Image (cartoon, rainbow, N blue to C red; front, top):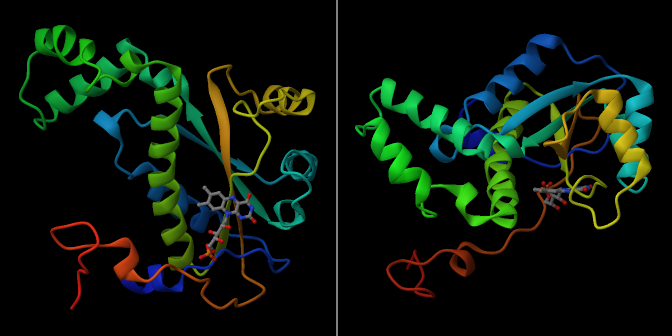
Length: 225
Ligand SMILES: Cc1cc2nc3c(=O)[nH]c(=O)nc-3n(C[C@H](O)[C@H](O)[C@H](O)COP(=O)(O)O)c2cc1C
């Protein structure tokens, strides 16, 4: 399937056939996430494949009773690793880019310029920006993963309404889940990708017209004439 076709076919799928999803297809989806680009190649993500009933039941409760989460044969928990932005880890990612010939700077420039400048170093901007950038990178990863899911003939919904580390009220159930899953303190479960063989064919959901969201040269001047 061409990427354009897979994008056109995208729908959030919330009803699944009672069929096992082959591991090979899940691997392709994970690989799509792995290939996603990220800020300075920091890759602040971890993808946790969840298939057991007990964990899925907890996820339904944490997502305010969204039942399709429990009905999906596979849920990929998309985690954001907040510690990936720590300067030593950020430096590792940058050095890897230097070694790969992508960036032509030396170690001193990385230490003294890049990792001290808030424009380049996310950690210099404090926790709110760290969280914002984490969500941004994860969004790119699960965007790629969604397109691959369609390509594999599977359906998926991204679930973000979920009680986690970013919730105002910390819940005991989330703490329990984090411990069950062995998630380190700095690794936040930020989105759930519910995946299975689609059992419905919804119409495309509404979108704003292109001329409301895209311009040419000046805001509000239509791209197309
Ligand atoms: C970051 C994010 C979080 C979302 N969270 C939920 C959710 O918690 N529950 C849900 O049913 N759909 C959720 N959705 C799906 C959107 O409601 C859906 O993408 C939108 O209505 C457009 O429909 P479509 O995906 O079928 O085109 C989420 C989508 C995104 C991108």
